[in-house]
Length: 97
Image (cartoon, rainbow, N blue to C red):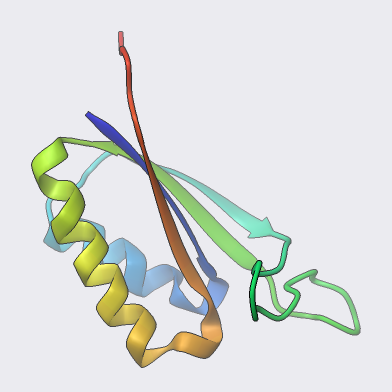
């Protein structure tokens, strides 16, 4: 099992959730109104007057074989909406109950 943490500009929320539905990734936790900025060239998403946009984030735990499929689909979304900001991080899950 792998954890995939997806951070994205809030305008992509519906698209990301549709993607999870298409890939039959049912379980996830979503955080709305997440603030931050990209590490290399991302603009701040602080929800302030100067930087009004915000991010959303999703954490999902999925089978190993779905990871590459999900990441590739996220890459395609990012290529079409690069200015919105979209990142995904994957790590191993050692155990679950």
